[in-house]
Image 1: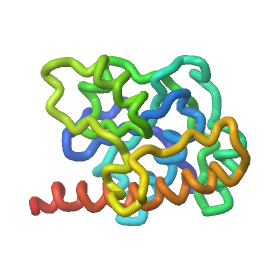
Image 2: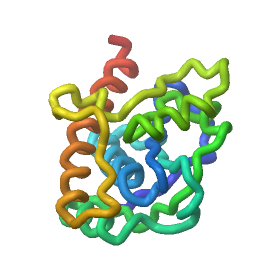
Image 3: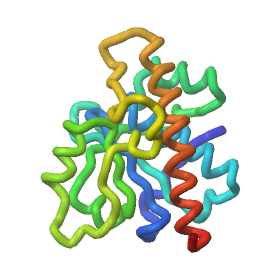
Image 4: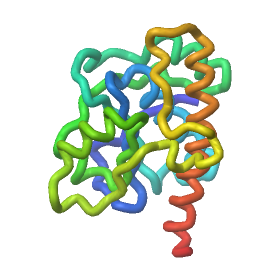
Length: 172
């Protein structure tokens, strides 16, 4: 499955999701790829816009970490078309759901958030209350097992977020 970005599409508060980590090369592109696949499986690809970004600018324009790509590929996700970008103030106009991988990135997003932002800003693992964690650990300085752990958490949280969006889309 190939992932593409639709960042130029007009936003809808109920159907636009931005995943955010520090550099946008490990956790958030993994979340983007997994969530895109879940959305496509529900045949909602044209209804839900998905993107990812980092709070830092070190990796802008770079593909995801090769270990993230490898781990994702083993589970059937293709992250190769994704490129890192930095989150900006305009993302609060474009995304109704902005989810951070950890508290440090959530604090950075809260500092950027304009006062009029009425969308959801929170931790991604809030959508996986049984995960036993509230932050997706950064696998960058570890081995391959860290990337597999990120995938485990992202798959569970993606299912929870997709269910929340399904409820909103169906008016429940």
